[in-house]
Length: 233
Ligand SMILES: [Mn+2]
Image 1: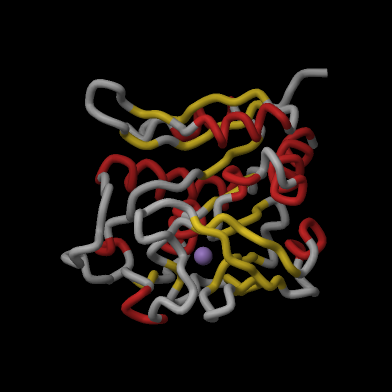
Image 2: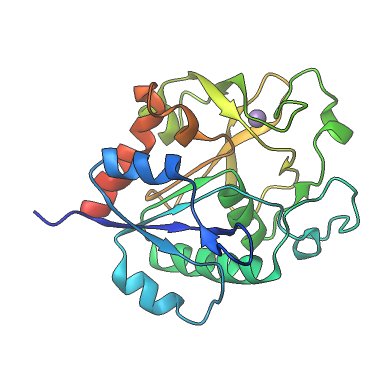
């Protein structure tokens, strides 16, 4: 049986090394039985052709979306890693994924791009809003664990249960929910950690980083397994 082709978004490492995807995401897709291909954030000209070529998509994390796309403070001093090309590519890609209902796992920035496409907004820097009782990234800007409580009535709870430990690595999160978005998981400080759309059952969106712990944590690997299974159908 042919392996499902899973497209993964990318970010610019350096001009020399170009568009890449960290190995943790790729390894999790391979363990799940998918065949990974990378989708450069260079241009949104070929989205239709991409959708013909892939059976599913992982929207990976990375730098911040330019807050101009959701009416936020585009001068905030903590903004980092912004890319006009990547924003344009991923905003167009996400519109197409929603329209064609392509099986998709949206991680961290991926969730944020979909929320932006649907007219939602982000907290530009979480500590400004919720303080630092719960850390969502370490002071050294590395991942840090925190618990997440998942709504028992959600599709996500069907995949993960209602309590999970997550690898958190973000300084932004959803403020205003996009059209039709429902919050289904929260950190102990109330930050939204996952959302769902009622009419998009093939779409899972989490604010944390399942790829970081998926090697040891079968629950988090389960999200990638779910994606490849959905992509098979
Ligand atoms: Mn978090």
